[in-house]
Image (cartoon, rainbow, N blue to C red; front, side, top):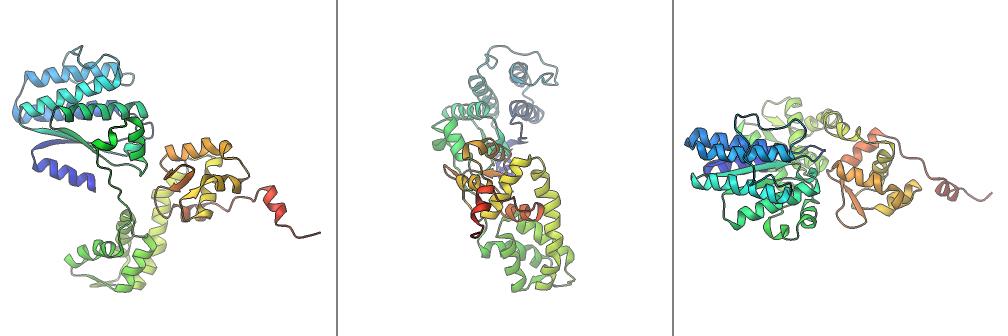
Length: 349
């Protein structure tokens, strides 16, 4: 939703906007080039800037031939323009692209905003290059920028990629809503339709969702569909809707993510669910599984890479979204107790 707001703000200022969503493979260069291409064509269609856009498209095409995946190149009839952005140094060449697109936008009294979701999936070299490109554009005061969304660890990852990243960007954490704001998110649209929520019903929704914005929206929709109405939503309506809402989240939100894990990773997640609330010590998870932290490090790293978990501090692990631990308890039985622990629980012979 916040990225949508950035889009509205950019449109109000005459900027051209493109949106990207990064997949788990972390590949961004091809999508970014395609986004720049669309922005240039949109500028050309509106401002009729002709040859200047063709030059920029040629530079983009040369970059795509150098860095794009096999078989990828811009599907437009321009010749590649060698030199500015095809040296083979990703950071240098991506910075040249930002400068090129930014200069076109500036010369024709416009700007470009690219919004990127799931930014935490971007691989380290590309993230570094992205930061370098934005830094160079900012130094030249060019009207091109990026707004991104990702996991809470994104700020630390960006700082590790380039030390000046923390000075360049604002990292705002979007966390659970306070109870009054969560209730407002439910009551405002209902009031517009002539419907009111009972206080007990509101408190129950906030308690179950823990104020997490997506869950407030998802549970609120199910309650709305289940409620008998016509002008009131009751606590009974909420209670009857909870199994439906939980089943929809399990099948459509949690399970799709959890099923990509292997047995070791699932066991790791299941133990985390037993140890909630987080953050949880990685060493404690390992101890519960009868393994060492080093032995489980690959599983832990893979869970972080898949965005199921993140590390708030060194040696700690936590779920990226609330209620995932509850899902794991519903989905899998408790892991077996390691032999050493099992024997320690036996009484004297």
